[in-house]
Image (cartoon, rainbow, N blue to C red):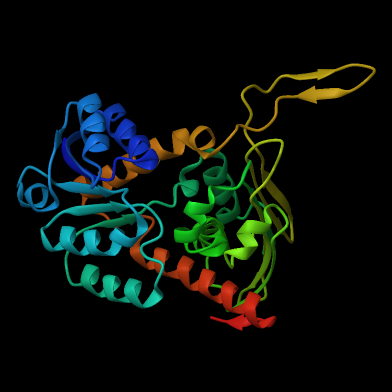
Length: 329
C-alpha cells in the first residue's frame, strides 16, 4: 500500500530521507515542514511535494506517516503531536537530550496505538545486519566481548557542538544502540574516559572529542566503544564480536575493493568519506522496514524504548566521565 508522508525538517538529513522516500515505490512525500521556508520550498519542489505547517499536515487524513528530521529539540513534541493525530512516526535520533523528557514521550507513545521507529540506521547496514544474524545463530558460540570503533573524518562546526548535547549524546549514541542491539541485553555498568585532543575549542565548550567507554552486562559480557572526531583516512566504522567459538568482524566500506600489491607496498582505497556515503543503502533499508511495519501492523525493530536505552547509556557515560567512577544503569 502506498504511504503518504509528511516530513518535518529540510536540512542535510532531511534531504537524505526525502531521497529515500522518492526511491521507494511504496512511499510518497506529500508535505515538507521546516522553519526555514526557503529550504522547505527547495526540498518540496525537488520531490513534487508541498510546503505545509505542522497543524495542516497532521490534520490531513491522507497522511499516514511522518518523518521527524528536524532539530533535536523538536523531536519529542513532534512525536507526541503525530501519534495523537493517528500518524505513524519515523524519528531521527535522539528522541531528546533530556532523559526526563524522553520518559514523558514514551508514556504518550504507549498510550496511542501507532508505530514509532527511531532512526538508528546502522542496524540496517548490510554488513552489520549479517554480523548480528550470524551472532544470533550461534556462529561464534557464547558471546564474550564486543569492540565498536566509530571515528568521524573531522569534527563538526563549533556552533553545532554547542547544541549537540555533546559527543556521548550526539555521536556515541549510535554506538550505544549498536552495543545494546548486539549484546541482546541492557548493560548494567558504564565506565568512560574522554579527552579533548582534536580541537581545544571543543574542550572549552565542556565537551570531548576523543572517548573510550566500557560497558558490562549482568552476564559479564564486555563491550568497548572507541570514538574520535578525527580520522584523517576517512569515516572509520568497524565492529568485532568475540565468543567462545570464534570471532565475527564487519569492516569499513571503500569506493572499490581493488588492492594493488607490488614490491614497495600494498595499497587500497581509503574508507568512504562520511556517513552519507557509508550508510546510503541503510537509509533506504530502514524506510522499507518502517513501511512494512505500517502495512503489516507489526512493531518496528527499533522502538522508542530503544531510543531511551541509548540515552540512558549516554547519560551514564557522562556521569562516569565527570566522576571518574563506573556508573550503574
